[in-house]
Length: 368
Image 1 (cartoon, rainbow, N blue to C red):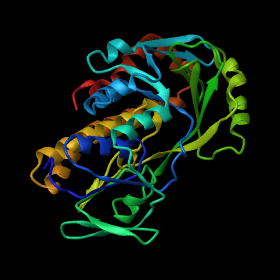
Image 2: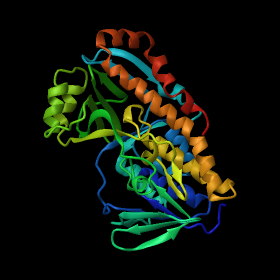
Image 3: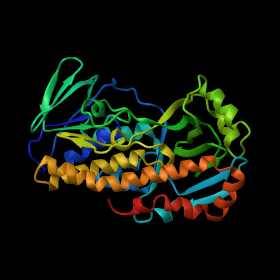
């Protein structure tokens, strides 16, 4: 169906929505893209993209522009709470032949995708109603405008309005983590992805270029604190390694709760969910952006190859479910280790950590 005059609406102009718009443009389609938030409300935080995300960007023909930003990461280092080594993962070996691992500001990836998607996003457009018609879908926005489309793609995150309006599933479930994010300037000199593992909590630092560090920390829980920086100091103030210097330099901290989305199906009629709207998990494996980018590539390929929208949606979901299920299951496996006392966990990681962590990505090294 590539090049056919399909009327497609993508709801959500984050990583998933812009990647889908780019992928569709590459097969000759021209979707409309809407976003309920106003422009320039980008979060100043960081992002780590494993090798399969780089491969997906290459398939989107955006790997060239991406290389101007951030920093290539060659190694993951796992330390205990005192800063003593547990294990290391050679990322060049793990993702050899797939792609580079890169850490960069979220804003930079957004701009690359926005340019690739054509740059035209209708902001301030919030969907208020979705009507499933025999061969199309009707969409109404809160300002009273609307339209009829051959395909509506919900790329509006774990708390997707499209999912609710199309009766594709209930609300996201709490994944049981409180997460803290921030960017440090003039912090310690760190070259590797470096995580310190404590009891039911962890602290990650990764360089994102230009002397900046992206900091990510989490703890088990379902309630965000009123003062996230004070809570970070309380949680990690006695950690070793680079943590004391990072905390001293970290001023602005964003806090949130993780969500998980697990659905029986991702499409209904002419409505399809992609990215976190369909299969959100906790960010433990750093696969949220990668899965969204892969979704975009496979969806465009499915629409190009199939003889109808219905056949394309069947083919898309059948290809994507095994990989997203793998990410969900491996995420849950790793998160369960939070409850293992460090006295039991740390010797295991010192002996077999490299093999354990490499196994978490085994399926994702394979082609899409």
